[in-house]
Length: 351
Image (cartoon, rainbow, N blue to C red; front, top):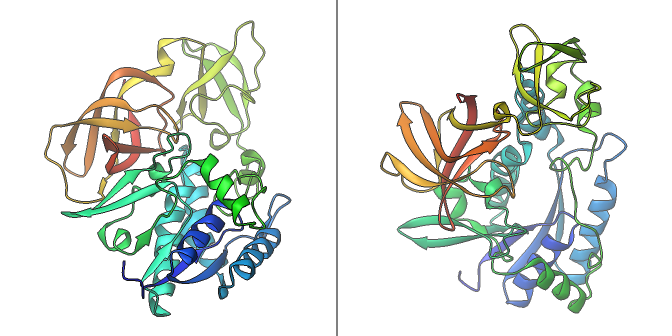
């Protein structure tokens, strides 16, 4: 980057984005901060506190500070889709969509319109520029967030900066203390992007009505009743609502007859190795097929070797090992070593 580059940092009010802004400011770039106000409802919402903390960081760093109201767009692009996917019996990942549509969609467009050359965030990930732009995992494997960024493309990556990609969380905390940032001791945020650590079932009940049905064993034996398929996810144990001598886990959902199918711990029905997806997104160039790579099926889940076949507008994954709780609606993110090739949404689990 040219030292005259103008950079807008997405200040969330947390320690990571605070340190990202501090590093860029200390490196001599023209830096400004921005807080995105995307949600202000519910008992867990911390938007007012987070905005105040972001403003304190900007003041400490002596950089201009902006507040953007994206609530309507966030609801339309992220939360409405979130509810629709749950209603269809799937388990979506709103953080993935949030990064694509809000942070590297609305915010990036806003920044470009204001004359900024780049936007920066506190994500633990890296971008390299060789033959096009590649997205790499952050060096801190415990904090790596490349999984949530696989829907970014070349235009977005060419204007994105991740100052924390080469750092560990421990190093970031130390830098926050060294720079005496107001967020140095603030706990990490959890839960849904911009919403916080809300109870998912309670959040779903805001928009989705209960529709009771049977909970049955993998053999078809009735074991109890559920309150509605959207309120359960594959692999779930807690809250299934049945009493048995051994723990039962959600194995699948039969949307057609409103049945929740469960299996005891260790049952083969809980472990799958073949599934299909929707249309894939590639970060850089589309690879050649069949593709031998690794796939991550949840954030922080271990990478699994896979053979991947392109089937028109879908991918077919054959995993090297049976894997627990492959979940329709979740992202299957494809890696080659530390490089993110792309990914797609799990559609159907075959066996």
